[in-house]
Length: 131
Image (tube, rainbow, N blue to C red; front, side, top):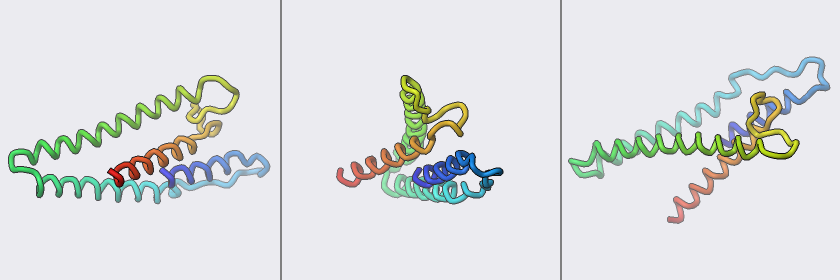
């Protein structure tokens, strides 16, 4: 999320630069590090989770534990979609400030959403480590 937020801040800076006759172009390849980090994290998570469930679960519970692990990942995706909807509605109401997630992303601040999600992830990590 921090990588995506940094990239979005860079993109907004380039789009918002009206002084230049032709704004600098950004390549789609700038997204590669973020997708690489996400892919590596997903691989380590899924492989580690499967290995843990097949090594540590009882014989009759291995498939159920794996299914519950995948259900937890799906629940996280639904929670993310819910948070996205709440943020979209919450930042829309009142005030003349631009929304975080407008129809035209050049007018909004999607980077704020990414930073918020990065902060929530760090809080989640802190709670996980302390408990």
